[in-house]
Length: 392
Ligand SMILES: Cc1cc2nc3c(=O)[nH]c(=O)nc-3n(C[C@H](O)[C@H](O)[C@H](O)COP(=O)(O)OP(=O)(O)OC[C@H]3O[C@@H](n4cnc5c(N)ncnc54)[C@H](O)[C@@H]3O)c2cc1C
Image (cartoon, rainbow, N blue to C red; front, side, top):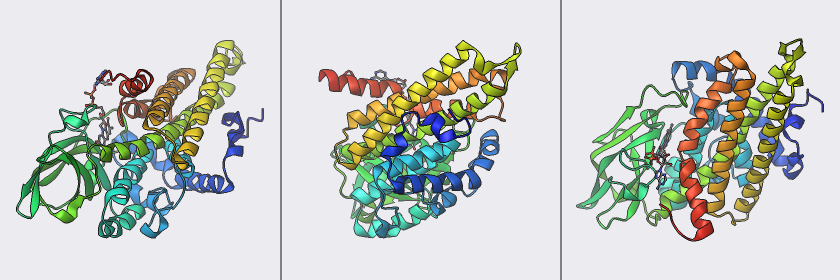
């Protein structure tokens, strides 16, 4: 195998043949832009636990936000496979970069497009697509993570409007968001979607500090104290929990592609290192134990690529079930975590320093395994699908 051909190294089953010319063109353009405009700044941002300067605008400029939103609203008008390909390129750089694009595209723009009024779409979607506005998605609460149906945030009728009360926690981009899609229960205990904007009375944001994971992404709390909500701030098309769950399906699908990018970056880094690093007079890549690691990693990467691609095709045909998405999210994140761990071992002590991206990917992937439904919960979703019995 030609070692200078990095695509061939990790496209073992020639899956590129299954992509259209447009997909490949999009991938090449995102790859070139993200590696030039974002990758050089990622390690430093992660070390300093700071958001990359101007990240959202850059993502907007390179067309990485709202890929599947129609062009008339500022989106890319692309298919689901294209969205996956974009997420893969972003996460090859850092999961924080992909998270920023996932939240903006799947968790903020998608619900506005699906459930918003024409006025809301025209007002928010183009600004979100360009990265001029930063959005957040508020579902998780201090007391309710895996069980969002039990949320305590409330939306109470008050004259012609409503009052929003409660708190959301672990929210990506909370400290820097201009607006947020927030999920709350009305007086009939039905889940409603609300568009909250920065500057509304009673709305505050707080950063969660000292993270060891996704350090180049900011995370925080959204707090609502009698925030006045008008009818025009509501997402009127939302049908209870189906609203937030539909957003999560879109984001989880993107994760199943994205994490392959992180895994490939770890694998390629480790392979280059193992071919050059000499111990006992030979490259460590020549030892059977190391070759086993590479063989297993490449096998798992290839299986994950097939899963993500097939899921993308099913999604484009409108045939992907939430349960299939759960399987791909869980499998591919676990695959990426294991590849990152093995790759770090291959670099020995060098594996723990920021000169190489592996430890950063490894720490990031711990969060990716937890958010958008934990590893355990996705297993239980498959279990429920298989047996017809819910274990949660
Ligand atoms: C960096 C980061 C960014 C995030 N961004 C967002 C965001 O933008 N918006 C948002 O709304 N949320 C966000 N989250 C929150 C994330 O979605 C939740 O952390 C996740 O849903 C899990 O909830 P929890 O942390 O409260 O864990 P818990 O629900 O308390 O679960 C703890 C453990 O118990 C297990 N468990 C729970 N219930 C069961 C059961 N029935 N059976 C077996 N095991 C069970 C879980 O698998 C897990 O291992 C983010 C989280 C992180 C870490």
